[in-house]
Image (cartoon, rainbow, N blue to C red):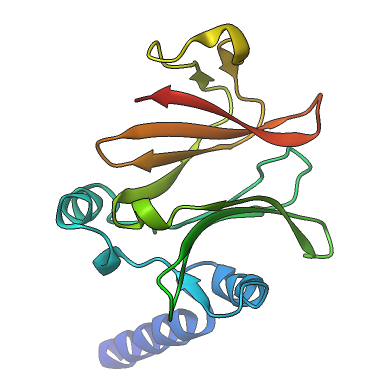
Length: 181
């Protein structure tokens, strides 16, 4: 009887593991998103330089440092931030896609990062976190310190700079604030 119990338990776990993807179903959506960027793939850890790779391995054990799936514009729908690399040319880009209820996504940010591709990674910045302009930049033309009202995206250029991308509800667009140099 005990053997039957363990066999059934193992079978149930196996079926659940095969039926529910480890990423919560995000990969299907990500595959659809990538069709908007022919020839590009999500930047992988081995494509980083050695220092960035070591940092990522040590600090991103449970999360992909090239993908964020969160609500960036506060509309209740999950959006994407991605680091992408062209398979042939090596060109790289950072994109933010805002998605609607019907899962149609529009590009809100598309920046070339080819020269920094080996040293860049992204992570979410939680709602309520404060972000302020680095002192190294004259802040008269930059935003004052702000409290994020939706999830932001921190782009780290390893050993160089950190920039937070956030939704400005008043202007209805993604804006940036450089938080470190």
